[in-house]
Image (cartoon, rainbow, N blue to C red; front, side, top):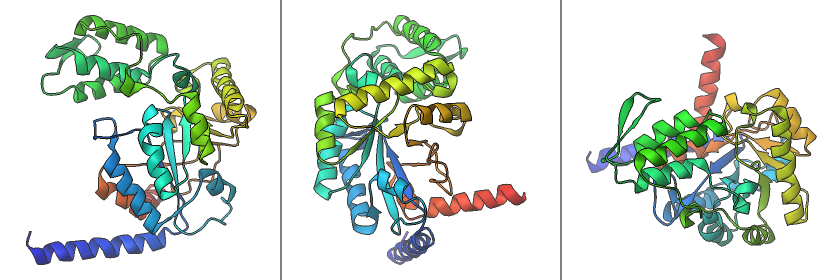
Length: 331
């Protein structure tokens, strides 16, 4: 592509995004992040890219705390408001994310899985990553798939296949699969959680709160609530809130659904969340009206692809949601 065509393309994208930003000025955007590490991995964003994204947001949008966005849900929010959220509670939030947020004076909400923070376990997707990344096997045959998964060209594709299979399984069934993988891959999981898969400590969480960040609950064990008996749902909600209230010496008001897709959320779970004392709950998919239901607040995944990231923050994904809604209504 020659220079003049590149300039024309850049100019057209600029006009398109500027127009979309104006059209989406009253549409609050809540961004969902998970992990940030010094270098990009298949499961994390690079620190340099995260810093670049925060700089763009700081210079072009009104970044507000999530609780402020929710409190002003009746139309009193600033134009082009954006809130930042992080899920799970990995240690890299404290080590890499927090310094960037402090540098740009950006508020954020961190939803933590309390059993993970306690060090009671490590998250099952990371167990899969560890096994696949460290085995000497070139391929893996799993009877559930009746096919060989190639590992010699990289383990990421195999991880996606196995994790997609595991995500809707009960914990007991998932544990069996992980045990079988240890035998098939001839590698054992360490008892201690590897450094790169550790959660934040309670002392670090206190520092995070002390500089103005909000903490919310992401359950005790990160199980999908709609898959559990209601008595177990109660325990996940109440126990995680109780320990957070005690550790932080304040009432935690926010909750984040594990997995958080539409099929993971139902009216019974929403009722339980209210009964447990939470004021709001965030999901993991976007919608045209993200704050209409405070027990199912919608978020946009933050992409490591800058083109997609800009389409989200400038409102092009919002326009796509409007178009999709129109098509569903009339066709």
